[in-house]
Image (tube, rainbow, N blue to C red; front, side, top):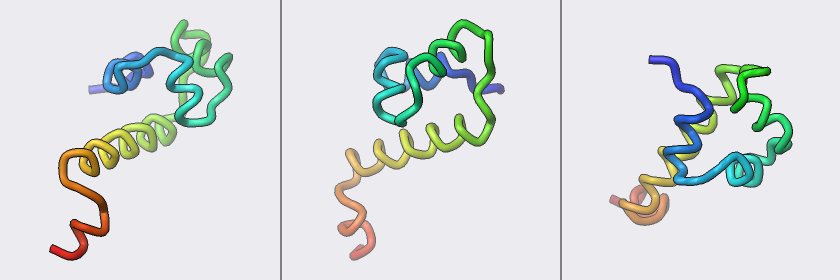
Amino acid sequence: MEIIIHDIIDMMHSDPAGVSSKFAIPLSTVYSWCNGSRKPPAYVLTMMLNIIFLEGRLLTNGTAKDRLEE
C-alpha cells in the first residue's frame, strides 16, 4: 500500500496547513503534494508516519522516560 499525503492529513485529523506547521514544510509544498503536481519523497512520508506513530505511543503509554524505567 502506498501512503499518500492525504493519508497523513487524515491520520493527523488536520489539513494541509496543519501538516505544514507541524513538520515545518512550506505550505505551498504541501499543497503541491495534495493537488498532485509534485510527489513527496518516500523518506519524508516515512518520517511523518514515524513521528505520528511515536507521538501516539507517548499519548497512550505515558512519557518515554516512563517506558524506559519499566
